[in-house]
Image (cartoon, rainbow, N blue to C red; front, side, top):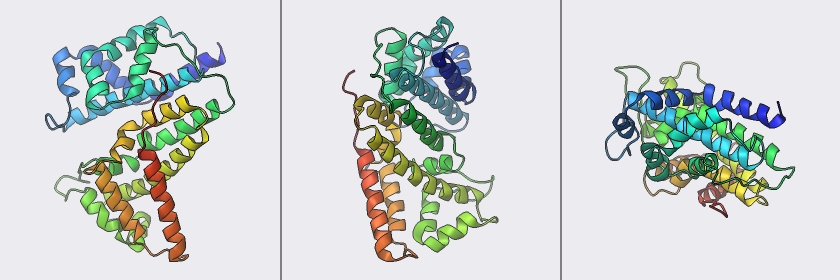
Length: 300
């Protein structure tokens, strides 16, 4: 077995078999076309809640898996040819009209579509070998884990996207509106995240998730700068997280909520001097501004 074959098997174990993506494959096989179409509808057409949220999350994990493979194929990390069994399982999913509308129109993502064309044999391009791509890819996978796998970041992103949730039935719901007051002072934030008896474990988790999300943004910005001389790889990394990065620019919803959160921590008085704090906030604002700018592929 070649190094590329081993790499492919690692990605399948980690991002398909080791995530809820595997359940999306099973559901695709057993659902009717109408069930699939209903589950993958745009959320502004009809409210999504309950078990449907879990089903859609599973498809999001599957689309992420396809994106991870597309980037791996682009840099020569995995074999050029895919096993027949793999193609027969996954190409019908990517070809399905309801799934294509989901990743192509409702929540546009470029990488699943590019991977679909690769499986069809319409795209075979690879980047020229270089010493940067593979280490950058590993760094990308580590950063992606913060967004997709971290138990604290998940509720923060849910709140950021306008969702609400409660710790236990009968207790008050937590949301971005209950998180933002916690961010008003450094003392309040630190007290919450360091407390072992927080009023709401969910609120504590989302506050930690906010801090981790800021860390992701800084690290991802640095990664994009590292690969700026490899434009299509830079575009692939950005496009993988396009859902969140596009929404940072929004005048309502995610963009507004995040700006309010950043404004809260901008008002903190840094213990090492307000000037150092202001400089750090300005740097963070520049990071956020850079991440909002779409990075597109040079070729289709």
